[in-house]
Amino acid sequence: MKAAVYYTNTDVRVEEVEKPSAGPGEILVKTDTCGVCVADTMEWYNKPKAPVILGHEAVGTVAEAGEGVTDFQVGDRVFVHHHIPCMRCEECRKGHYTLCRQFKKTHYQPGGFAEYFKAGAEHVKKDTLKLPDHVSFEEASLIEPLACALHGIERMDVKPSDRIAVVGTGTIGLMLIEALKAYGVSDIVAYEIIPWRQEMAKKKGVLSARAAEEDPEKELEKLQEEFGWNQFDKVCVMAKDVRAMETGFKLTGKGGKLLLFATPAPEEYLKFYVSEAFFKEMEVLLTYSANQNNTREALRLIASGMIDAKSYITHRFSLGELDKAIAQTIGRGQCLKCIIKIDKTEEGSK
Ligand SMILES: [Zn+2]
Ligand SMILES: [Zn+2]
Picture 1 (cartoon, helix red, strand yellow):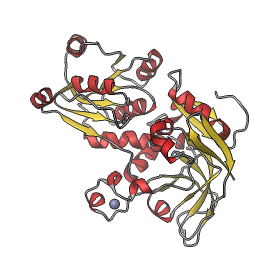
Picture 2: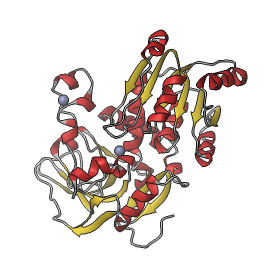
Picture 3: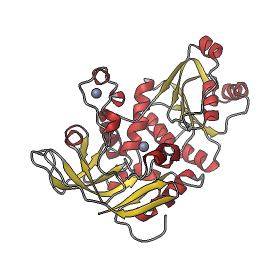
């Protein structure tokens, strides 16, 4: 079978690799669509693993069901979550599934950017979801990134009365906004420097989408003038650049929570003003990946139409165009989610 093998962001080759087959308890899935995640574009993260077949937002049709598989059969349309917790360790016992030692080690094989992938017995048992007929593969490819946004919401303990700032409105930021709206939050302000993304945030129903004032004090004064309040209960920084995180720190109100969604490179660090944090009694939270409850909730929101999954997909590429999809994702053009359509052959990306 064919797979897109990653060497660097600009060197991705379609190569012939061995097609896996389903052993006991396992399923083989014929990949239809796999989304490109920002993590797939982080060279510092992926190059040490190269050559590697990336892709963890895959959906497709069951092509083989191994011995003993009773919940799925050939022809079922499925989403498979790439990471699976053990459910037995200390972290799992406390509900911190994404921190389970097994979690990060589990992947479907060889990855989502391939014609087929194999879901192991643990995947099949714990986090493979059948797709309702009315949910398209393209929509379902958004389950994993949406689940990550929902994991962040879970971490923050959001209330409908919360005043929330979302810093950075790329795909996950916009999904977070749409999910917050679905949960009844109305006071949401988006901070974003790219005008096109500001417009997208407005379409998702934020009070305002803007670039923050250079001086955070001034920004808070402006909020007071416009909305009659000047404290954010929750500030979600979706961008992986440290300056956005520093802005988020300053915007977090008294007793507020700052949530960081993305990681910069390992050597980068954030200025933490302890005194300010102290007198605000603020909390800093981080959120990594998503668990098996978040994926189920993501599918529910997409299937019910509460999240308009289609609205996020801006570019479609073939397997051989993964390098272009990576470049498109990194670029700051009018782009949200790039997806790889495995059977797509023609050139062109829109
Ligand atoms: Zn991802
Ligand atoms: Zn565990």
